[in-house]
Amino acid sequence: MPPRNSISFGPPGFGSGCHPGIRLELWTRHRPYTQQERTALHEHNAFWLDQSDMLVVSDFQWTGSHFRPAPPQMQRWWNRMKSWVDRSAVKLRADPGFWAFPSALQKLKSGMGYYSRNFDLDDAIRNAEIP
Image (cartoon, rainbow, N blue to C red; front, top):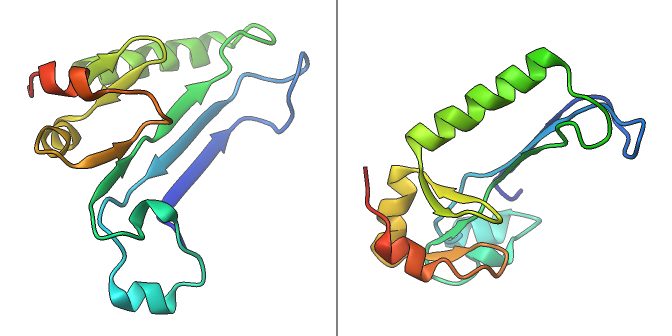
């Protein structure tokens, strides 16, 4: 099974009646499959089929007040979360936003491959300073 964890908070649904929701998709692997995994796993992800390490962008989002006003406690939580990410990670790109935590940035600066939904982050990675 591919090493991806996807968590959603909030009731199902989409559209104008949708409640604010938070979604996290976290890719936790960067190493290629071992020969044993290639044989044993029923499902493979192309990111790790060759022999190179590959960091894959994870995703964290929320609907905010797009469809209806977010409850105040959810808005406070989101603001604290954004503040924590800004303090803990390096912003590589503003729109759309890309951040790299220090350990990932070290790997990227050492030349590890990455997938960022076809957004070129090479210059941002090269110019970013590891905290």
